Amino acid sequence: MGSENVSKGQLWTGRVLSGLVTLFLLFDGVLKFFLDKMPPEAQAEGAKLGYPPEVMPYLGTILIVSTLLYAFPRTAVLGATLLTGYLGGAVATHVRVLNPLGSHILFPTYLGIILWAGLYLRFPKLRELTPWQK
Figure (spheres, rainbow, N blue to C red):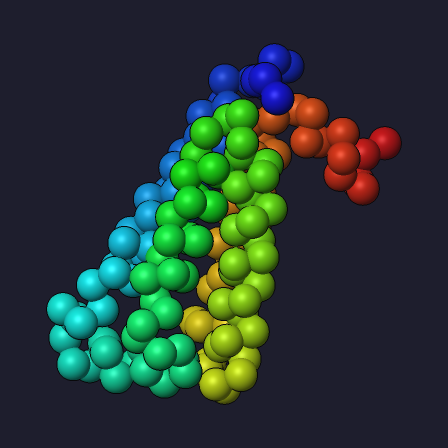
C-alpha cells in the first residue's frame, strides 16, 4: 500500500495520527511489565479490572507486537486489525467492571477510530474498501 495519490496534507495528518496512537500504545504496553513499580493507587485501579498481575506482561507483549506491526507500512493493516481486537477486549473489560462510559469504556473506541483514520489518510487502497465510496 503505497502513498501514491495522497496529498501531502493527508499523508502527514495520517502519519501524525498513526504516530500518536503508536506512541501511546507502546507506552501502555511497556507499562504492563512494570505494574509492581506503580504507585499503590494505580495498582489498586488496575486490580479492579480483574486481571491477575502475572498475565499483564503477556498482554503487554501482545500490545507491543501488534503496535509494531501497525507502525510499519507493509504490516500496518495487519497491526490495525490485531489492535482493533485488542481494543475491543479493552472495551469489554471496562463494560464488565462498570467503568464510566466516556472516559473509560469509549476510550479504546476513540483510539481505534484515530488508528484507522491514520491508515485511511495514508493509504488510498484502504479507501477502496470503505462502504461510503461512490
